[in-house]
Length: 240
Image (cartoon, rainbow, N blue to C red; front, side):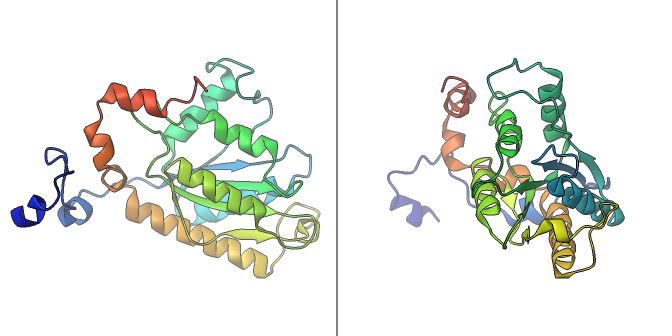
């Protein structure tokens, strides 16, 4: 090992660590039910993103998860209220509580909705030197009024990466959502529903696999070199 390090003069050896398999596999496993926060991106009375999110919640509960849905009604625009606004505080506390998330948005004008983005923007990138979402799992879904599209889920994947979340490979995009739910708001049997089951199964498994080792998975050499104060200043977006 020392010979290999001699060829890396740029490296700060005080902060360099070889990955340790025991830190991934020989760790105590949590026994509580996995905790999931679900966000949806429309306030319409018959919101298909909410209906799809509710189906996802039923599945996660059936698998043994603890699930909370955040109702975004009354959430102010970012920077139009203080951080101690009741809805902002509720959302942030739920984000801290959760071990995994589901984001579900309609596609509007080829993008996720402003309401969906507002919820994500209110979740802080940092609290001190800690990112509240980093290392947590994420599944993304979208509904469309017309043909199948992936613009919203692709955008949410970018945001999930920015928030340092572990976004699972699978995703759901429901086309012509108005035809996929019955009068009671329940999703009809279909290939679209089967995909939602697939996505929730995968999210649950990834959460069980990673939740106990998430801090180690996102531990970074560059940030070990920084002081906590320096890191907090760099990731704090309030000055932008």
